[in-house]
Image (cartoon, rainbow, N blue to C red):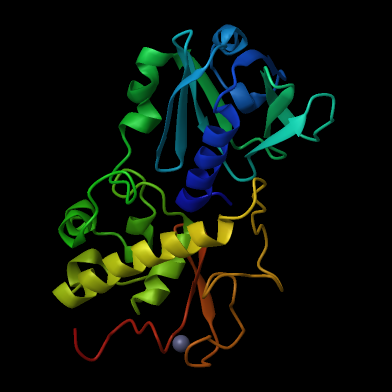
Length: 274
Ligand SMILES: [Zn+2]
């Protein structure tokens, strides 16, 4: 499931693909990918890419004709570049380049969306305007993290996933950051010591960087949909298997409707000293 690192990687791929090329025309399927968006605006998109931005899990693109769109990859969305004429399964929207290549917005489950708007409205779209601190875009230090999360009364992992506080972390990378910082997912922000805030900040940076390094090589991102043999994560999806650090069996429980994975030894709920 795409979170900040995967969306950042999609942004970098789009930047490479549009570089030196013009968008000639677009094509859209009549599916819920477009929600209430003005499909007429999407159909009119053309020209060179003048703006490409990622904030949290949202991408904003604008073209020289002063039109643009906000895209969210949802659960299964991704951008792919293919030669013209090649059929792409679950392609919901297509961008035809003057090179002959076609960029597809592929989304089997259609939880992702494209919201086409005049370029001047991109930053004001409600979903984007409400986003909190972005660890790659904004100044992201311990104090900024503490300000963003500090007043939340919710469990730490739920607070980390609150896009209006911190933009970009989802179920996977929030769990990874908590494991790296030895913090139990049910701790509250108010309970963290200065040393723990520092550790959490460092862990978030490391988690994002690790994921970006993993994605670095290829244009097509393969998301890990189900935890399995090729699970690249430290804690996510590892319940019932020995912790990679201490060999205690990894546990899971449900938090705000999502499965949370943690190590009871490495991430105690009541640490001896904080
Ligand atoms: Zn452990």
